[in-house]
Image (tube, rainbow, N blue to C red; front, side, top):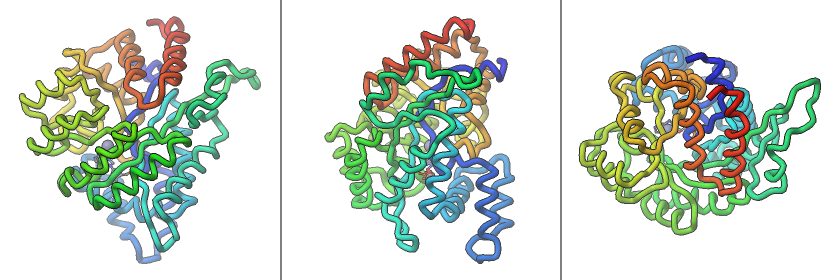
Length: 362
Ligand code: IMP
Ligand code: ZN
């Protein structure tokens, strides 16, 4: 499959972690600023950054290092702005960006001020038009072409936020995140994600917060089956989240349950292969789910950490599983039905796909 075609295809990104999607150049710049401060071990950092196949444990070590680099408000704002620009530049028309609100007393950061810094990043994007406030008048004219400047029509992207609960947190901290998400709905927060190192913690710690989120009308997505844990996978599927991410270690009974539930799966091909949660791309469960017409969506997970982008994920899927343009177009278009934003956004996105179908030769 032609990479340019994959890049020009309108795409929806539903599983992207903010701090995992930082540009390499920014990560290196931030790392260098810490040299000599005795906070990070530069050679260890460099070794992990340069390593190709990191285990899941090493990935979380890298996240711990990234956490040190992105502690202050201005850096959070900067990386948010850059991540949105990067997704928009490859024709992502709808981005559900997820991030874990963090408290850091040393820089007077609360979970709330962390999310405010993210929102500042959303507002500071100037190279593309960002629509992130639900029901704003802007969404009515969002896909009315703006006047071309020097022949260029400005790109536009819908952005919604998911607040993540980290599996290291307490029940109370998770509750705080859900309360924050509820307060921030007016600024485009649409749901809650459960993520973090899947080998630690017990997901039932977060069940009260997840149930509360759902009762209050927030959508929930869970990282599910990243490690073999049959009981947890079953309980997560029983919870019936609106979507799940990964689904790598599901047994036969889980597959039956998943398929009958029709819960959409966020598929992260490169992430799964690089962290070795799937042996190789040719045995990836994408094939089984795709053949069964199960709802699924291709995502990057951590485009920075795994050196990928959404266009690349589409190309990998097309090349590895023998899908043509028509199938890839439909795969991308179907994702509209699994977003957490409201029906008006869905309607606008359907229009986007209809308007480009002919020129995309599908
Ligand atoms: P943040 O939430 O913006 O800080 O994004 C990075 C965080 O996302 C990491 O520290 C993890 O908690 C979470 N994360 C990123 N990738 C994965 C994954 O593959 N599995 C589980 N959690 C992940
Ligand atoms: Zn993830």
